[in-house]
Length: 412
Image (cartoon, rainbow, N blue to C red; front, side, top):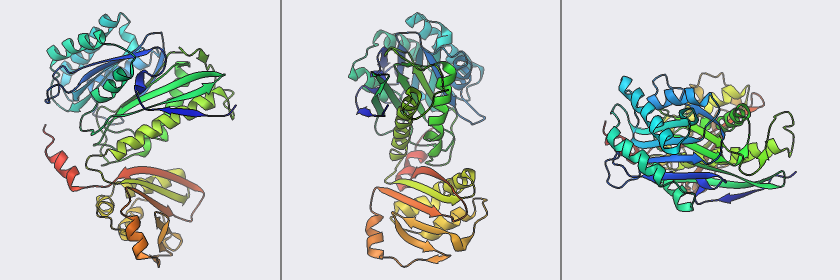
């Protein structure tokens, strides 16, 4: 069974059968008429899985959703933007619980089937009068047209400059199935999730335990490979709902062989997650460059990842790329302080496939070609260590004056 996919770019979160979304501008955000609350709903009983921030300071909705997702029966997600409901004490917990309770009443489903997510400014109480009215309006506006899906992608945005969404159609068991996803995130982004929300829907049916396994694999190769500023947030959430409306049921991981239904589904999920993760980096606050860092020839994948992240999080590397300066000294020194034993004589560095450092010394290269290459919006840094057979990749962006301006003016 071959793997083929058709990419879809509109109404993505409601593209799978049996899903609808409703949104509203209820006044949580300071900019009038900005969508700031939304609900994603499966018309059929469904399973769910989710992963959350690794930050020990985490928001009330994360606390509540961690418990709810363990039941494995997710049918709806209620999300607000403009207010993180983080560091808000007992009242924040009560407000998150009320959001779930109100959503359950409006949708006529169990509270155990609902996840809640928030994003925005930390430390401010939710304006619950506006939230209550917003939940009622959002559920009343549920629909499955492309405009409903596009509005949902916009409703979760904060400092994002554009909506981030995708859907793919796959052929499994001779039937069409769809995975659709939306995400938000532009700053406070680090490996092991980030200041990001991501929601994925699919009309395939999987047991919750298997869905969780698939999601973890996809997140490890996507959202855990990105960094903008090395700062992990309090609200990070990635969740998936699977409702089986396509008629395709995948019940076991035992036959996860080439071309199996599970492998095709995993490949589709990996594609969606990677696309959305890269979209976050490309929309990084003030970003002008998308940077891929490949570390090759390490003794272990862990060591390769440590070096790649050290380079990706270096402000000096990121500002050099912003200035279109191939400053190899900053790159190799960032690798050198990553806490991994290196052999300088075996280390080789390429930028956009141009060799610029080898055997402990700068390499001879065409400086004009290199200078032109640095003007590209996509930059690839490849560091070959010559120590083993393991590699890892991290995606990041440059650091610009605009990033400082955005975050200096982001009021708390």
